Image 1: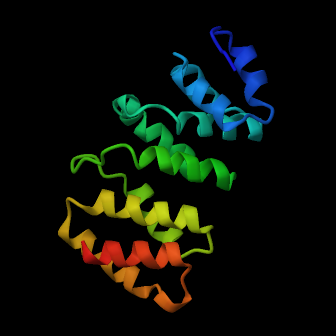
Image 2: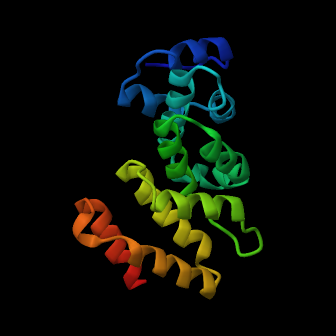
Length: 171
């Protein structure tokens, strides 16, 4: 798939249907980050989910660009009813630094609550990683992360969560 145009309606049409991983990668290589970001907030679930999916394929060089939009990504991760989009946005957030002078306590609480919720494994795993990333600058918060992880019964966890829990407790 070639996408050279900056025509937003054409991009929206592409994202409103099923796209392959190769299409997602090709779109991520096009110079349309801003357009994709705008479509992340589209009212059509498939369009916004696909926009998030394409954004996860951006090269690492786009991480500073993502970091500039961290607050908007956080807001959407907490607001969306789409579990798919939430997981994809949390993946994008995992690529951004969390600075000590800009702690979003609403998002930190959201991540703590997600860890202990019945959210899918992928979302819970990302919530653990993002909780740790946000808490890394604060020893008292790291103690709370540790306590929360201790509440998770390892014998009742899927392998991925059990591994991540152990890895985070080692930190």
